[in-house]
Length: 597
Image (tube, rainbow, N blue to C red; front, side, top):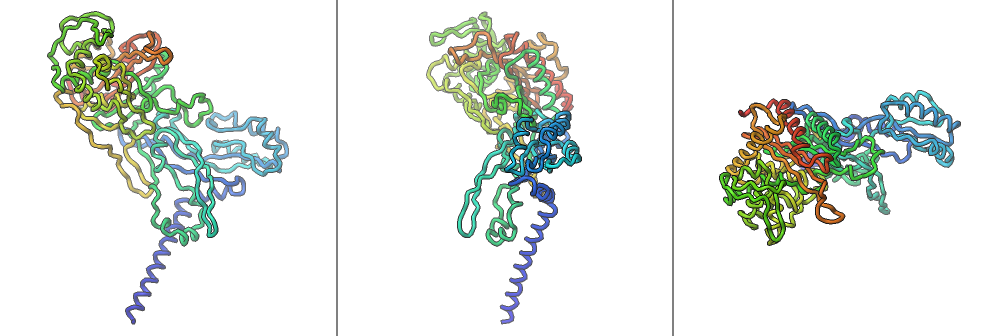
């Protein structure tokens, strides 16, 4: 009897202790962890109806030294509203506010209604609240509050802020307001409620939405009602863990690459310019830049929403001659050719009644495989493709992942188009051997080329390295293990050939390619651009591409750059050699990469 009594007492004390622990934890969350949120709510509860507190995780870039730089965070400032019932002089009030807001240089991203809209809002006497300005800088909000204008209210507000403005904007992405449906349940019925919330729409903001989102609706829930009505969700919350994102992007590298992109576009007036810097051994991306881009802090000037997308992940292109090293690697790996194999280059050949010619139509006669890459010969690439045979070539091109997605942690990745390979005709395969008739994203191209630099492995590109959870734990984001697709001896042979391209051809034509004491593997590509209107290809428009990896003996980085329809030059060697090798030299110096020669 006494034993049962003691057991019951211990059980009751245990339940009381558990309840006290939950209560203390909740009080701590309210008074300490969510102090700012509740304070903000209290400040605005009599001003702005149905207000929703905004909070969201931070996105960081990481420098070579491990220092984190916030590139997407929450900024605190003010919003301004008017009470039409109290406002005395609408026109004069607007002029006073406009003088402060419009003259400030710190108000980028601030939205302020026009005078006509302001007057219309002021004349709506049926309401006590009309919002007239958002994202107001703290100094501006303080200046307006100090005026104490009757009928004008200034209240704290938070919004998404991007300190780097347009830096890596298509990688970071941006947020937008969406309506979410929640079910409000009482003892008698359930009601569907539509609530505006901010969610990621592009880039990392979208792909890591579950981690970056914050459950701000929790501040509106009565704790005791929630506890007793749904104790399971209170104690054992199964929502995704909230946290911050740490990207692989290095802000210094990203900034330098974007400067080279802007310089290249300024010279050649291209329709589009993009660049990627990747570690070919791990798939970690250190830079991904593109022009045109946008400033997520102020999208009011954007006329085409397509600029929010990331073409290097979401678009596919015919890449041209930078595919030739992949063809050569497949030919060597399959045993169809060796680096010492020769062929008779006639300048033009006929395949399935169609003509395939070198870029200049000239014959080179009997030459070795090296000259296919050194002189970028289409007839030579066709020779390698024909020597392999269709089934073997198809196997390698599929293994390169050219017809699939890479699995990168960014949204809306496009599949490559290699449908032309699924035919029994040799023509389509010969064209694919030099990068025409098949299309892939710049990212998929970079992944395939990385296999040449890392000894034959297909890696998974990624832009996030870790998640820092708000609970205090950190999770490393580990991509899938690489898959071997080529023998190392095959990639070593192709790497030596690409180093010879730089040493024997590029260095003679472009002094800027000379990097003393470093072996560098490179190849250019010039592809015809398909004409969507009349079929076939434009005769005066080209896609230029260029890749390089270094040091060739043990590559640390692969740099890829492309541009669409540059004006005034036909070949990529004229437009992309300088910017790619400027990025190469920068990376060598920035990361203090030791020489290998």
